[in-house]
Image (tube, rainbow, N blue to C red; front, side):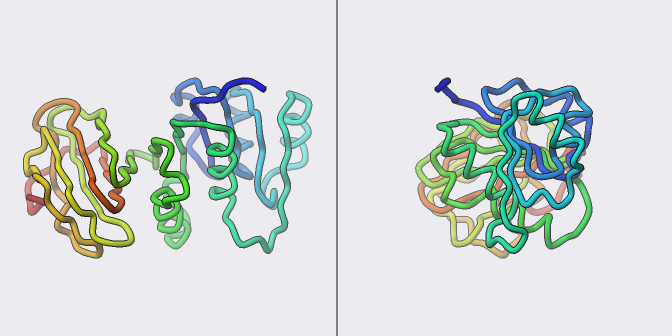
Length: 223
């Protein structure tokens, strides 16, 4: 069995441009109709997973002919296609996982996808995502992540599930030093990088770091 350290997960509706720009990884996983855009982009696929209710038989046939494994689940399953794909990536041993998600569509699905990314089930891997013009990084308690931004790019920090404790940041306009970031508040929005490659460390809890392509214009932030 080949060693896997990195994985790419492409969800249904992921933009073609994002798939074309995605880095090469050891493992490529299509979550249901994410297969369609992977094939359109000319990317090889190792695994297709989901209930497969929105992917064409032709795409499945092409993927199978190209050597992809097909894992079909019941439509009335308890896990989303994205969860199944992330489970497969983590089970393979991947320590870095990039997820490409749909920009737009149903709001409940968008929210669920972001919350799924923050699940402690995947904490042994560094997970980041591209959602249209937005980029997302997951920082779990006990971890420090360097965020690949340049000075002037926006960054928002959101605690997920519970208060994120011992949050320390560098190279942000409004830094935190061993601070607490409660959930369900807007305290962490409208921050920005003042030096390239800011870092975020979290002692306990989970933080979603979210950046858009539009620089900030001021406002409150975590500080």
